[in-house]
Amino acid sequence: MTALPADAARTLRADAPGRVMLVDDHGLLAASLAALLRGDGFDVAVEEPDAPEALLERARGHLPDVVLLDLDLGREDLAAVDLIPGLREQGARVVMLSGSTDRVALAECLEAGAEGILSKATPFADVVEAIGRAVAGRTVTPPAERDRMLDLLRAERRARRDALAPFDSLTPKEAEVLASLAGGLGAEAIAEEGFVSITTVRSQIRGILTKLGVSSQLAAVALAARAGWTPPPAPRS
Image (cartoon, rainbow, N blue to C red; front, side, top):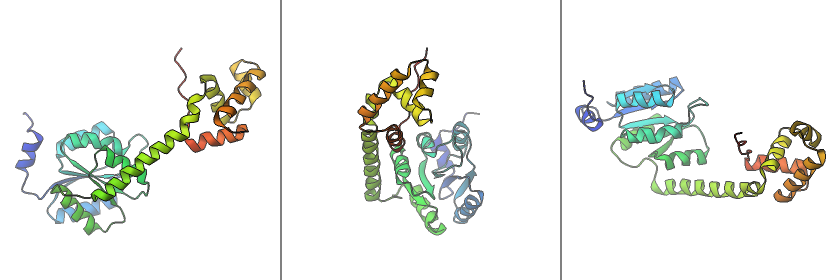
């Protein structure tokens, strides 16, 4: 049997005020919210976090008008922000439900296409009302707040680029040496591991300190940690 286009299938199911899919790894919270939504007449599906492909496939089966998506899905291999474009392509509006105060991570979700953000501290009745607004195509997060969060995200990225800029001047060998220093190795161990002289390694360390504008190996390692620097991948042989 040929599947109906998403818009046509939604039209046939227009007897409910809206179709909602909840994706959350907190079963009790999701079940409680689903019960309230169903009490208001919403057609609700609850899904636990799963592989991205599987979640998107189940969303195609549910055809939700709105997906209420937990920011922290409790899995290292599953980032909520990565699900947003695929859900939007299916015609769903995505609303983030989060207990996090990480405004940068939440702003990344808005940038990826989420319609708005709701805190897990928000009373359930207000969450239900906000979902109703989302189903109706109305605003969930006020435009001014959205703009502030996106400005914060852009400022954070600029600051990160500025912090990482000195590391771009390191040669590949200097980057390797800095990574070894960060891993707890001293100059002699680095020389032995790299089959080079201790003089060569000390010269590379002096180059690192000069380029990063610091006076000690400890300061270089601390600066790398603060900047979130990671060594570039080793070239393939």
